[in-house]
Length: 52
Image (cartoon, rainbow, N blue to C red; front, side, top):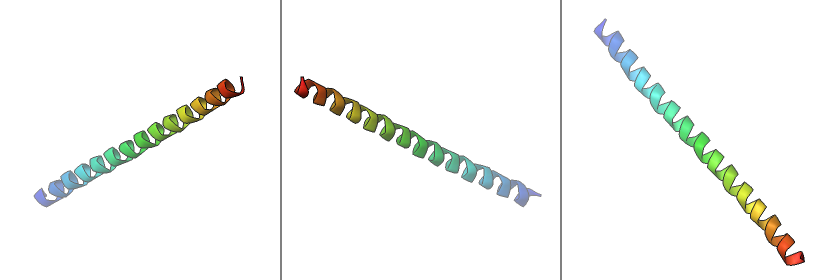
C-alpha cells in the first residue's frame, strides 16, 4: 500500500514537470511568432517609408 502511494506521488511529480515543459515550449513559440510579426511589420513600414 505504501509503495503504491509512493509510485503515485512520483507519477504526479513527473506529470507536473511534463506540463511545465509543454507550457514553456508553447510560450517560446508564441514569443517567436510575435517577434516574427513585428519584424514583418517593421519591414513593411520601412519599405513604404523608402518608396515614399
